[in-house]
Image (cartoon, rainbow over all chains, first blue to last red; front, side, top):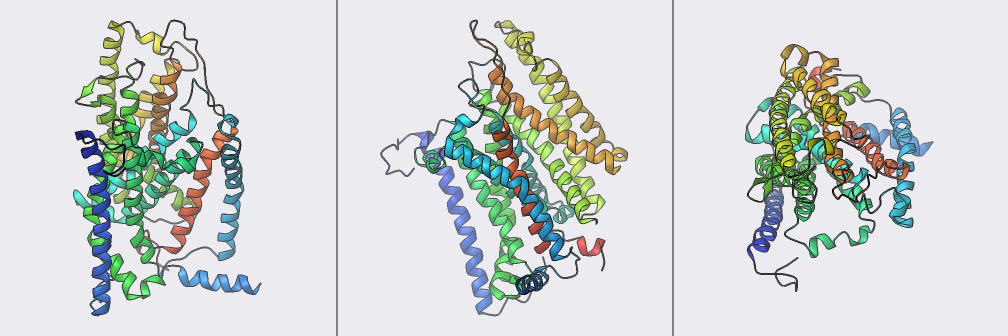
Length: 54
Length: 418
């Protein structure tokens, strides 16, 4: 449910509940993109030599 | 035959370096055997979707039956993933790095199973998205649905580096770097997982706890959370690590080799034992307090256990046989390091959690609450059993494939030199 949906009500429950869900989703997207972009840059700049230590 | 030889060659190139696996033929036979009961489950699931839920023994008295009880149990068993991740990445118990990958694999299966079973239980999975779009933000079940979905995404992200570390994929620079940076971000991902797990494990307990028309399950609590909210979290983190140990031992038995060092198992078992003791103490206090409160308002203790098969033996079995006995075994170093006893303790602990979840869903509905209510019992039919057990077979296939092709046990090479 987005804030522009007809069922949306501007109350604390909706802000806390839906806000938490979207925060988690956005955070996961940021982490994935951050890791992906760094991996891409490392690969393009040939800095991926020390990546076998896990 | 040529195809088979080609696949066999491909298979050997995908197996991690420095470890031994069974032949490709053996592996195919094993996967084939698992497909037999799996197909029975698929038929049962298709029957539920095609012929609707009247092929089950669910009815208006029992809208919650085996599926919901199994769901709650599976989610509790999957808590090993978030709790091991919490201990490894946030508490920084480094020894657990040898088992945290496998805990994630078990977690992925458990949460996929929970969502799959729900997909059958709602009858019309095509309308599954309604809960996200038409969310009732005051419902604990909505919170559970959101948190389970998000946490499943977290588990998939935690599983992703394992796939990228496959021998063939890892040859390429980008996947190798991606896996490396995901590993670096793992403490943050684990923290998100802890946040989500805390709320959905708790809210699953909150659902029976807020049923004020059912004195057997209703509890007072702290702010909007009934005490069952906190008891469910505690019971999940007490049994989750035991389930991870149990599945590790089963995998070791099937692979006929040691995969994780004893000290790692011992740390998990010790923590699980302490958590179980804390849970049992709080659960006993909660039960005694509720016996007094419910008795004072006209719902005597005896009325909760008046109908067979839900007699007083249920309470004794849940807290005594499936609670106190595993706690004693897990607390003592001597018994914990005895492998058969450790497996027995894990088995009892995991059975205890399933029994608790069954009691909190099915027995809650069994106890009559009105003077004109009649006692009606419920037992699942083969369709419910088969569609639930389907996930057990799928899980076994998933673990078999993951174990064969991905480096999930970092100590395997050291423990089993070629």
